[in-house]
Length: 388
Image 1: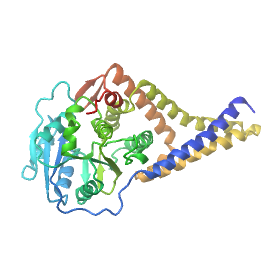
Image 2: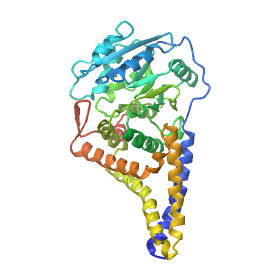
Image 3: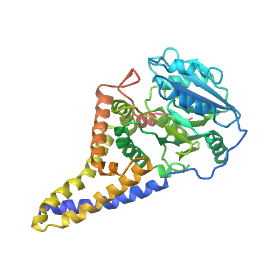
Image 4: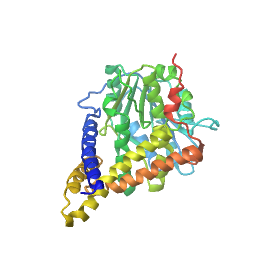
């Protein structure tokens, strides 16, 4: 037996154990089951920042208008679009309040400024920040308000069902979602004594007074992934954060093409990871997931010499990755074919992470026509937050 056969076999066995542990943990992602709604709760101001979303905004606003909750107001904050977004939004002028974001200050991220402008026009005791590519079920708001009241939650965030519109989005997004969940220990998200936090800007319902106490979007004005930062502020200040996977209540159409997916995740990933050290560590972990495939190929070539040990021990993590792929992609309404493409997905994510790190540190990232130079990480931001 060669030394690399022994190393590969032991590595494969250990990886099988570690993978099994974390994939089992992901089964405990908080979900909502059999939740009743409330008919008449406090006024909720729904704020929708919108820019260049002609293909999704009509469906989004229609779903929000049809939400069965008496005390709500819908505020659409219009950015300067280069498509028919404004024209489509104006069709709803009798049912939503339309405001314009105006000139975005130099030290603000565009979306954060739009959310802040929306807040200035809001009257609700509760504020719901959502995106123009989301689709809301009729009972979503009444159920989440009920959760907020019963749990005495200060902020509730939802993780949606993805509606994929391209092969690449269907291939890459589930893997990114799993790693975001594992790295942020989502199974511990609703533990008030734990350090885990995560926010999804596609759905953040927050108590107005708490929003103001933590500084709102003013405090995260130059943070690219403001949702993550807001969740971190909530947890750091000792408020109650709740997060739930709720595909029955919320769905989203994020990206239309590979280029849009690439640009979107490039602006987000490094800011969320937080440092060069952690980024390189994550890349190393992902590269490690490819080793069993490489060792398995070597082992198959060595079968002529009756070398079964390497194959046996590495086939375990490969098999587990395949089964996990089947489960994950099925959960995201994809076919079994994608489970065979897990190695390709891992490779794309590695390159994407590396590109995000380089662009965030040395160059700039862009989104919807705006460029942001030297992106600040959320963890760096939170480390410098002063508690009152």
